[in-house]
Image 1 (cartoon, one colour):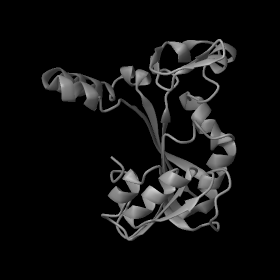
Image 2 (cartoon, helix red, strand yellow):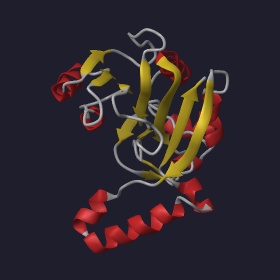
Image 3 (cartoon, rainbow, N blue to C red):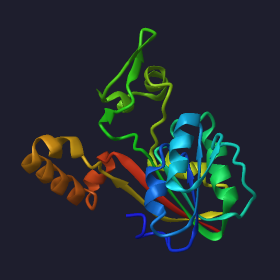
Image 4 (spheres, rainbow, N blue to C red):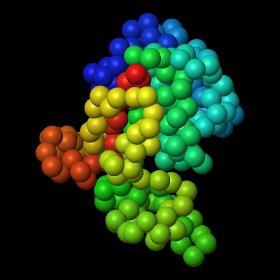
Length: 215
């Protein structure tokens, strides 16, 4: 999916919020110039085992010069940071002119909030249906620890920045847990939902896929 939109071969690549380095490991098959940033030290140590250069820090203040990377990647990170507008601005700053950014983040219209909620001061882990359909004040009280974006809200973060939107789509998840337990049903669900990505039902997908190019 990434290679459909980005030239990875020999590119200078940055994963902004790399976690354990899963994506860095994958990108390393195409380029030896891979770098990451991770906020948790133990995860950063693990990510360095991929051979990538991984810094410890936050996405709102990147320790890199402007116009450094050919490709900046962000997988389900922006919804967790303190300042998502600053995070977006920093992604653009460190991307070279003509370089691309690819970002995944939660879709507000997906029927399930996957990050749990707070109820009467106590965190309740697990998938919670219909939370994101509530008005902002109530939704944000239940899930103050994570954002979910409408298409308009996501694009607005980049509206004043020197980028062009190359592609926006909404995708469904892999649902591998279902396929592992019930292979036939899992494959059927995947087939139906992936087909829905090309229909109006895509509005109910799990995540936004946004591809930007820096001017």
